Image (cartoon, rainbow, N blue to C red; front, side):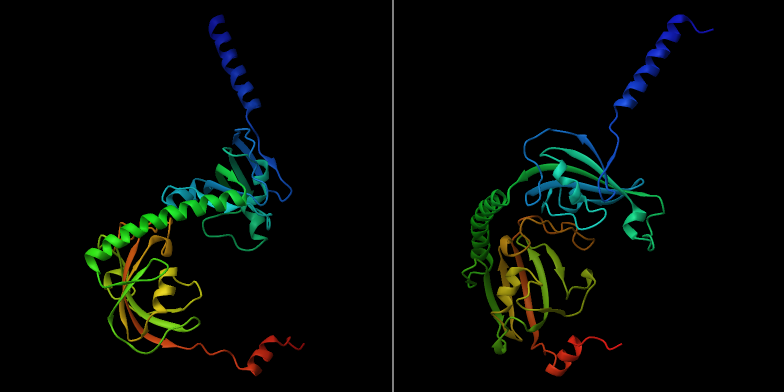
Amino acid sequence: MKTTKQILSLAVIVSTLFSCSKGMKEFKTLKSGLQYKIVDDKKGDKKAVEGSMISMTITTTIRDSVLFDSQKMNGGKPIETPVNAPSGVGDIMEAFPLLTEGDSVILQIPIDSMTHGGPLPPFAKSGDMLAFHVRLISVSTKAEFEKKKADETAKQVEADAKTVADYVAKNAATATKTPSGMYYMVTQAGSGPNAHAGQKITMNYTGTLLDGTPFDSNEDPKFSHVQPFEFTLGQGMVIKGWDEGVALLNKGAKAKFIIPSTLAYGERAMPGSPSNPKGIPANSSLVFEVEVKNIEDVKAPAPQEQSMQAAPENK
């Protein structure tokens, strides 16, 4: 038989659990069906309104599986994005105006509502909730964000200038510096006119960090893509240092580029691979040995072909 003391203790425990369950925050539903629950409300005065810039961490899950982790993908750093108007069902932008700097929130949406009756992705089943765990680290106006970025870039340009100059003095003393701050050195002369924007370029290359660590190559079999690399010059398909450097070369030329981080991948850290576990750390200046295998003009469609493409289909 339970004593009075035991019964009272049990009553207190039950009462406490009931009170806690009543006090737990429940999900609320927004217009599109996106559900939200603010789990840490800092009650700040900087709201993530449309047009502002935010930095955040975000993890996307379905059941117990993690589909995306921004910190793992971005070297432990928060990601930065503008707050835009929501573009459809499940767009987490719909919830951001409810948040202030420092808040943490869980957002979720039924996976079925995002597929519009179509097939579900292989990792999901009907009835699953797709959840987004967001921590809003900072909120700023567009002007504040751009000033901060400009200041950070100026500091990095200054740091790169010294690092790259030191490397050139020790390893490529005859290299030529361009106004942008990159260096290049032609190691084998080519022939014909230099490449220009809009042309298709075929190249071989090997990229290394300043310490000599190779991070990619289309000539070294260990990187598993031994075939010429093709891209259109001047279209932003490659890093800025390549768009600038390749335009200084002609067909058959070989060269060495020493590219400051601000003309390479900047503050983005590139993930490693079995061939290069180190990856490319953030703010890394890079060295490329390149060879221009071919330069060719990209033919525009003939006028007749263009008009046929633009003509509506006859029914």
